[in-house]
Length: 242
Ligand code: NAD
Image (tube, rainbow, N blue to C red; front, side, top):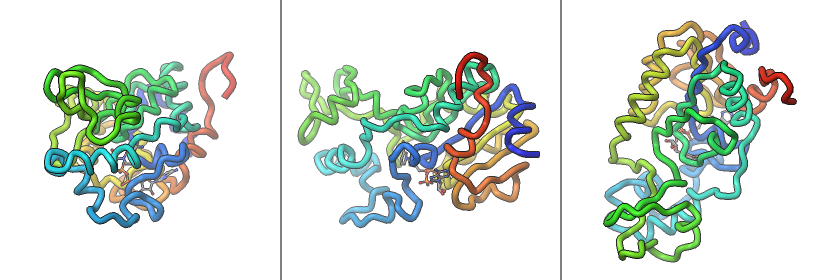
């Protein structure tokens, strides 16, 4: 069966994605050859993005975060757009993403479980006041609330737990799906990668440029670009051009 056949026959698709879903929007992933982890830093990115580093070295954390984690000019690509159309057409029940860039919502997706949080939500650690991403982007040094507290992005840093309600919603959606499309993820970040194991449906599809530990367990494996693969399929919306 082709991906087109599988999508045609499905009515409860769940899409489980990672950083590779946004590379076609110009946002580098972490583990590809041109990913962030292959660039040279004095302190490795996985350390800079840990909770202990954030609290010990907030100024250095925010310098790295502003430079590398705030792609505010990026636009949704063909993958984000197609998934939002499938949701509107009643084919897709949810997107579960490890991404923090908000591009699924920017494309129009409504049910999005953001396992690792979002750059678009930021709160004061003292008084909990909300700040948009632009506040962090435009601040200098350590972003401070009007009360003096540090404004921290609601992104899940290494060493931090995932949000319980988000995990519950994501797992429930995956367990109820007839098709699970896993795409643009190396499946190496836990516990997120383990959520794929809750799938009980018919078709497990993987779309990833490089091989992953899931390749041998899938109904269909496409080593292709996810935007190109999804962009080639119908929107299933009458009256809307693809
Ligand atoms: P990863 O960097 O470990 O792996 C990305 C995978 O996507 C690679 O296997 C690569 O082959 C594949 N890929 C890259 N471009 C692709 C494309 N166009 N089509 C198909 N496959 C493509 O990413 P991960 O597994 O998501 O883990 C990284 C962690 O970093 C996640 O937790 C995520 O939160 C975070 N992150 C997020 C963003 C973002 O929000 N856009 C960007 C970088 C990292």
